[in-house]
Length: 399
Image (cartoon, rainbow, N blue to C red):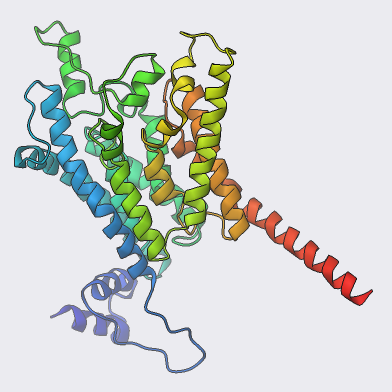
């Protein structure tokens, strides 16, 4: 019996009705729905939730492929067997390391989605389609798969389902997953060994007294937080030939993805631009503090404070977070003025946290989650301000 016949029996005969959401999810994934509405007013448009999610995933694909090359490149480079970046050795190594992360992310995440759909008796939502691709790109490549599975369950349940599902969540689910990993398993999400495949295990062998050379998989932010120099050029930082999370290193590809999302009217250019402005302002303030001599060289925060203000846009996960997560249409501000405020504060707070949190020198994740919570408040006051201005104009006209 085919899928369509099973679906017909469920709908017409009521057999296995509780599994209808699971059947419908598979059916609408493989086939075009043959049901249309025949009455009432409707807005006809080419875009829908699935197409929107598909566009975001397409924007993520270049970052994913680059991450596969970079994973292999950084591994071979750190272990003293450098290969060409665009080599099949680098690609296949990265592909085989990242593919399990993608599989676990989608299997576990969609499994939770289907379970909740069956329990609550509604259709399976497409919201995890993008989240499932984001998650493997924002975690270290060596993260244990069981940790990733636990984090995905937590993120989908607590970050989305408890609020009512797709479109109702107040926090970005992908960032909830990363935040859970950071606070539950901090040694796997920070430090100088987690960003290059195999570096953590090699460090353990060295600590055990094995006759091995030392190895580091440290990010630029990690080096700066410890007051070290880093041996990467601006070109390396911009194009992404540096250690880091799988998809966050190439600012160039993230910039192209941002342009694509703006052109397709999925991502908000106001949020992206204002986030950059906020980060530059905070960076300039820190540079001014250093130039004024208010902080001594060699002090705890000197290295990150003295970093060129515009370098903050090229290192860490700032660009990725701003383009793919700050612009999430569900959790971001909805009003135009609110988007400017929301984005500016994300950029401003990101660099603030980055500098004053040397144990985990990154800030965009926490900044976006914080502003997710305040986005409805920002929109509320923007709307109230508009209402008050209109009432004043009305009084002037009637006077």
